[in-house]
Image (cartoon, rainbow, N blue to C red; front, side, top):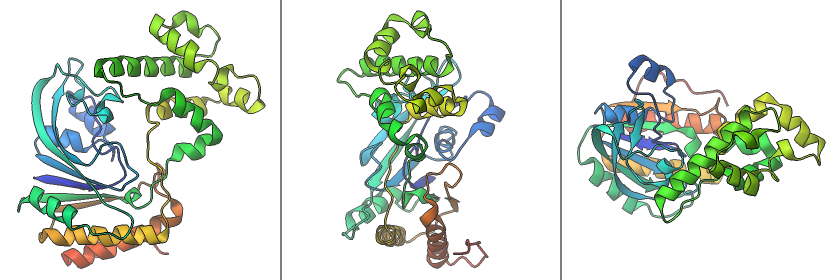
Length: 323
């Protein structure tokens, strides 16, 4: 992922670029819970950044390329939320149109291809956004090759989880929100229950969803395989399942070396076109969360370090992993 942010934050990466849902009234709690996927919006809300540019590869479909005005605010529970109706925010229940202390920012999404093609339009778009303003540069190395770690974790079981819990964008967004809440509430019950009496605790809407879409697919109620029985008793699996069920639309594309080199070339073209240097640069390997592929991570890391040194005449010793 690639983020540039005016001060503008420019992020280069695969996704989860601007997630909300953080407790915002307690500063210490906020700082302790920030991750590479959600630090940007709190910084925007505190007015460190006024715009965000997300540069994404074609396989990241969370937000369509374009320009968006996003409004942030704090809800009654002290959580940072947004009034944006983008499916990206609706899907994790970050939407709230009754917010306090509202602040707006521009979100620009630019797509860069992994095949050889002219990117002069993207370069011009990026120059027009920045317009000689100060900017920061944030790389997530999973931009160049993106792994959905949950596909490996669940194997063949990933498909049925995706079919049950994927966010569904309906014409009436309020119905989308209600159905999403039903999905996630039901998922929470499934992952916290160790008995067969779950139906007694579900609301009518949850029960309808459970009976029509969950009961015959979820491993806990499948007696046909020993694997299903074991999975139903595995606490770590259940914990992972709850997380996965909320994020079924994560991108997955294992790039070839040629595709990675093309993306690196396009990265250089974009940054060269700005004719200015960022005031800060961050690099995230996305190694421990396994969004980067181990086979290509060190190669990408070294190439990015070399590119940054060349573009911005950095003389300091930035460590590069041994290949």
